[in-house]
Each structure stands twice: as structure tokens, then as C-alpha cells.
Image 1 (cartoon, rainbow, N blue to C red):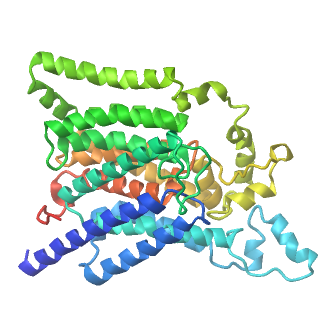
Image 2 (tube, rainbow, N blue to C red):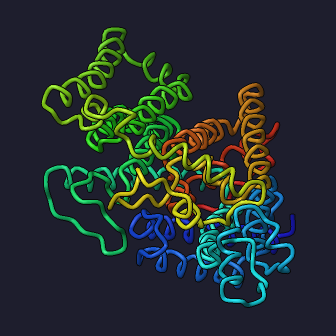
Length: 461
């Protein structure tokens, strides 16, 4: 490779690393909410566009082939949302399912039907389109990073998750903290997120990254391994304090997966110790994990466990609303109601028995809501993504490739986000959007048969 080309690639990698690092900090501060009307959305999107412009002006060309399948999926998603904003002829729009009530507005005023976009709430769909600048920027930056820099990004993410956990502990202790960029729920232990379920997922991903950092990270030592072991029960305690039942389950799965993916390094560290010390270390780790949960429960601090016993499906508004959500989905299928348009679509046919002061702004099952929003096309896109994730993960596992250190945790992080989307909508927050793209990039870049997917590890920030 010519020297000038090499120098340009090195600069592009360094610039991308620092831009992505800074953007993750911005997301930690302002990217923990999903509502369109919170101030954090404007802050996040402003910096996303600024960083994207900086990259275009000062970096080498974007080699999208390094992240080709992810770029294709994201491009199709952007195109799908954009097409929902294109005005349609009246004869086409009125033939779409679920438009009867809206069609009647022109009829009762004795006016001709206007050209209207597919979305029943164009402003909400425009907001959804605007939100996709976040994953687009993260994907562009991830494609330029070396393997070493991706590991450093994993360490930065772990640090941000730890910082969010400390903030959650302050909230749990009763400290009054109000981030004006995020719509906090009263008395919720949600760290730097507006929703405790989304924060619990954030913590669960930390349980995947802690062993990776402690045993395989840049500059990993025996001390980092000890710290990683200590972080696991700490994150479990934080998850228990959030009150998120799904979050505790995901955290437990992440702890098991994180240790399993790094089992060779864990075994090597233990073999380097005297037999009695290795046994004591394993025993202490088990005692810390089990003891943390038991102590939290016995002291009445395990809010997540308490909610299992005080709640049931009949009292849960999400469970009660599920039939109405499915009915709404079928009303607009196969065209969809428009991305971001769940609120008006649901309220049009909302059951009187479920009317209450509480605001039911999402389906609390993002798989259903995405299909409701985007119709059959979004369902096909989701199916293609699931198939790609499964094939990439299996290929990584079977080939035992050199880069699997990031690929397998990336694959499991994607799975955690998918599972968390069954009872909630975490991927609608900018922070989880970014994490999803980073995890998918780790999976793709580490799933090949060689290390060619990564650029050379020359630059060091």
C-alpha cells in the first residue's frame, strides 16, 4: 500500500475513534430517552450531524464494504421510512387499510381528497427518519476502526455503563438527580436512561463487556481480571435495584455468556494460581453472585424480585392492551400506519375499558410495533436481519476465528437487545441504537474466515 494511502487510512481511523468516543459520551448524557419531545433528541442529532460533516470533510472515503450487510439493512430501513413520507394520489391513499376515519375528514367537509403520505402521522414519521442519523454515524465510524480500536471502544462502553450504574446507586439512595435532557420517571432507578428497562439492558451489556475487558482487553492483567469478576455481582445488584424483571433475567444471561465466551482466558488465569487459590477464587465468585442476590432480596432491596410477586399479567396494562395492539396491527396491515405513528393509530381504536390517565405511547413489544408501523415490508426486513444474525453467529462459532473475541459478545448483545424488545422498546433510544450498530459491527467484522475484515492495527489513539 502506498505511504500516502496508508497515512490517510491511519488518520481516518484515529479521527473515527475520537469522534465515536466523544459521541458515546454525548449519548450517555443526552441519549437515554425515546420520546420525540425531550431536549436530548435535539442535542444528540445536532452532534450526530456535526460529527458526520467533520468525517466527510476530513476523512478518507467511507469503505462501506467492511460493514456491507449492516449498511444494506440500515439503508433499506431509511428508504422504507422515507417512502412513507412521499405523497400518494388520493385513489391510492384511500385504498390503504385503516384510513377510513381519516378519509371521512375530507368527505364531511365536502372537499376533494388531497395527496397524502402513507403515514397517518407524517410529523412522527419525519422524526423517526431524523433519528436514523445516529445509527448511520455510528456505522460510518465503526467501519474505519482497527481491531485494537474496537477493543478500546468496548472499554469505553464498559466505563460508561459503570458510570451509569453509579448514578443509579445515587438514585436508589434517594438522591435527587434530574437530567433536563431526559424525561425521568419519578422514583425510578434508571441511571442515565428515562426507562428502567432500557437501563437494565444497558447494565446487562456491561456484564458481557466486563470479562472481555478484564481478560482480553488492551493491557489486560490479573488485576483487570479481578476487577471484572467484581463488576459482575455489582451489575447484578444494580439490575435488581432497577425493578426491571426482564432486566434481571437478561443480566443473569449476560453474566453466564460473558464468562463462557472468555472461558479459555478464565481457565488460563486460574491455572496460573496455586490450586487452593484457584478454588478459592471460583468459590468467592459464586458466593459474590449468589450472595449479592440473596442479600439484596433479604434486605428488601431487590425491587425487580418484589415486582414478580406484587404484579400479575391481569394487572399489567401492557398485557391487557396486547389484544388491542394486535387488532390495530391487523387494521393497518399490510401497508402499515407509518413509523412513529403508534400513538394515533392505537388511540383511534382504543378500547374504552383501557382508558385511563396513564399514557400508552408504545406497544411495549417492539417486534409488533415495527410491523404495525411498517407493514409487511418491515416484517420481511426484520426476518432478514434475524437470519443474518443467526448465520453470522453460527459461522463465528464454528470457525473459531481470530476475531471472535469481539464477534461472539457482539452477537449476544444483539440477541439481548432483541429479547429486551419483546416487552419494551429499547432500540428506540439513541444510546441503544448506537450499541446495536456497534455490536452488529463486531459480529460482522469478526465473523469472516480471516482478519482482513479489519484494517491493519497501525494507528493508536
